Length: 216
Image (cartoon, rainbow, N blue to C red):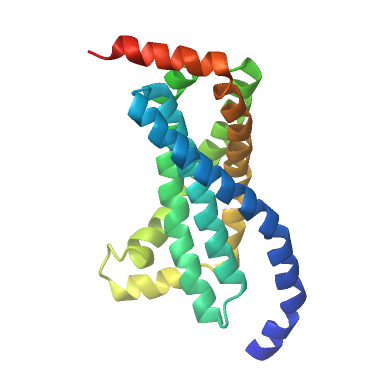
């Protein structure tokens, strides 16, 4: 049965690789740019720029990790391996949703105000944040249970672990990752526009001057 499953998955796997190749290339390029910019902002002492670059780099890394887990599930050679990767993906989704809620909070909004972003960009940020909040509300309990019982092994009741594993399939977590990826990719795409705004010469000059004023 598993041999037949592997055979039937070949066309879909080829499409998966082709579809994600360009996206991963964009994410990798964004990651390299944000790392360089974050280091530069730290050197000149611009906290708003360093903070915004740091959040953007976190988003790029998170998207890359989720994509890698999705691929691992889709290309797994057995049902056990599929669920094994799904458990790790569930932990990542739980932690990622919690971390983004903190990273996109009040301090992040203050940084955006410091660089005078457009209102339209803020509206898109609010929409993505609302989707992330809805994801946590709808799936947070389930993801937390998977993490505690069989992901991070915080609970030592083996029977409870086995029972938890019987309640979901790899496809369940795979679908949750697809749902989470929608606002995540919205934020990554938003960063492409934010970077263009931040890198305008006048905006960068203002940031450097402000950093110098704040230097003792």
